[in-house]
Length: 336
Image (cartoon, rainbow, N blue to C red; front, top):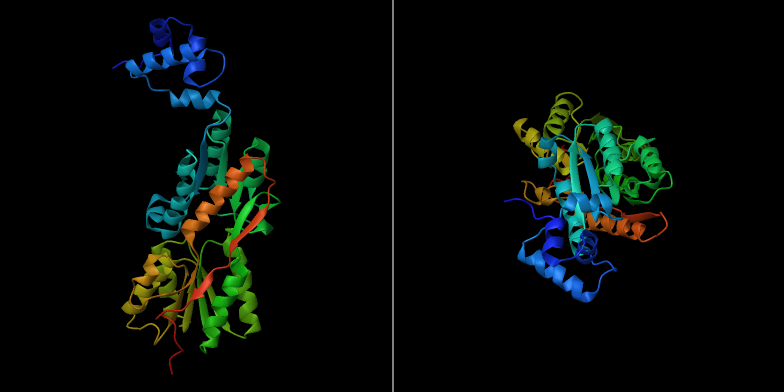
């Protein structure tokens, strides 16, 4: 069936196309009687707005953008972003805003997406995740004039609005936890080092380990289950740490499987600590000790701050939380 046009509505209602536009967009310029007649005709013709055209012409698109530079496979498996996006959506739905979610392969493709969105006025603002050290996206978004809330530490945000969790304090607590159990050989399976939050945890892990005189190893990988499993296999085949701290729960669960396949037990042979504390951590055997925070609420806080920014609020850094140590069955003293 052909799309009903404004021209057809105008012909049926006996008014100009401009009057139809005013009436359907609830703008002044027509009488209430004309507005009611136009809307009645539009309803009879089952007219639906062309949202793409409206977004290009309107002052606001009522859409926020979020770009995730992840493989589709990793994204489908990683609990963090499922919870985070759910939190964002919970706020936007109540404000009649939509979320444009774009999954891309890498950082250059992400930056190209911002350029496209800005040129087409597709979004009113963006949420930026996985901040880098000296992140090139910050200067690009400033140049484009796109309002943004960054998800990451103020030391990485260069004065832009950001919402962050205290990774330094959380990592320190994780290291102190395993040291308090008596572990001296401690490993960390970390995410990719170009990510700012990984870099911050790197510094905190090194500092706490030096202070506590621990023998440590770090293996950086890509946050995936495969990467976590491979790093764990390497550690157990070489340095044989008695405690391992993981940068997300997906890698920790994969690492637990490797521990079992090596004929080892947790916590009897190796203590495991995860990050983010999704439901995965509570349904493994043993259940996983984790640095925990409410990821859904984190996403909701970020969305709320971006809405505030559009209302004219000054860009500020908001500390959302310090992840809390939740001790479960995977924690125990070293063997022997």
